[in-house]
Length: 186
Image 1 (tube, rainbow, N blue to C red):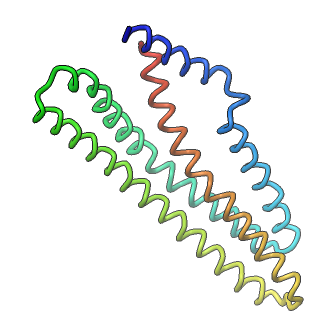
Image 2: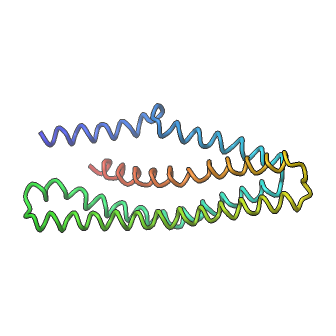
Image 3: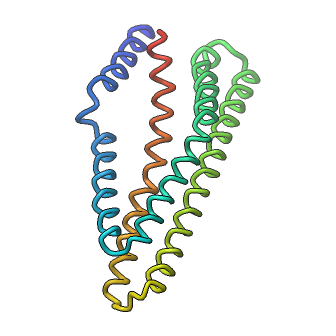
C-alpha cells in the first residue's frame, strides 16, 4: 500500500513539473510580472530618477537572494532529508527517538525561517530606502503638483508590492527545485 501511494505522489509531482501552465502559482507569478512591468513603466514616464532607483532596488534584492540561494538549498535539502525519515521512525522507533527526530526537524525549520527572515528583512529595508528616496527625489526635482507627486508615490508603492512578492516565489521555487531533484534521482 505504501509503495503505490509513493508512486502516486511521485507521479503527481512529476506531472506538476511537466504541466504547470494551469497552476495558480504560475498564474500568480505571471500576474506579478505583468504588474511589475506597467508600474515600472509608469515610474519611468513620471520620474526618471525614481525609475533608476526602482531598477537599482530590484538589482540589490536579486543580489541578496542570489547570495543566499545556496544556503537556502542546503537547508531545504537537510530539512527534507530529516523529514523523509519520519515515516520509518514513527513506525519503528522508540518515543525518545521520535521526540529527538522531531526536535531535529524543528531545528531545520527554524534555520530556514531565520534565513528567510533575514533575507526578507533586508529586502524590506531596500524597499523602504526606495520609498524614502522617491519622496526626496520627486520633491527635489521640482515637482510641485500634488497629483503628480501622489501618482509617483502610488506607483512606487505598487512597484514595491510587486517586487516584494518575488522573493516569496523564489523561495518556493528553491524548495520545489530541491524536491524535484529528489524525485528525478528516484
